[in-house]
Amino acid sequence: MRIKTILAVDDTTNSLRTIKVVLEKDYRVLLAKTGEIALFILQDTPVDLILLDIDLPAMSGFDVLREIRKQPNVADTPVIFVTSHASGEILQAAGELGVDDYIIKPILPTVLEKKIAAALAAHAH
Image 1 (cartoon, rainbow, N blue to C red):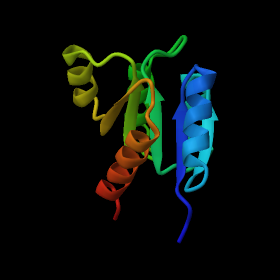
Image 2: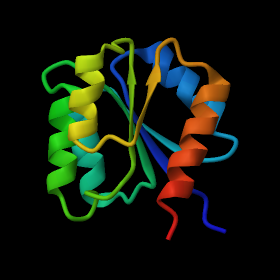
Image 3: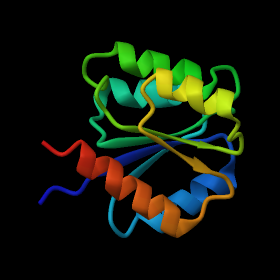
């Protein structure tokens, strides 16, 4: 079975480190510190799931998600927002853009693993 690839996009080194340490035993993990880098990676690299911080420099997670949904090669890729903002307005806006789920910071390894497994299972063909 092919190992799944996850792209984690976060401007916080600690968050990226946590994600990589928790997931690298089961997944190929790619890291990006900005939305622009993430979109560049997605041009050539197929990924199975994207973990996307909302608060990114220059391009917000919402901006990145809008771009992802416009690109045919990644439009259907599951996206999980990773955020410290869990207000109703933020979550509603995320849902309207087609985010699959969200994880509240600080990232708990068990929550991360469960939500990724669920999103991948929901998108399995």
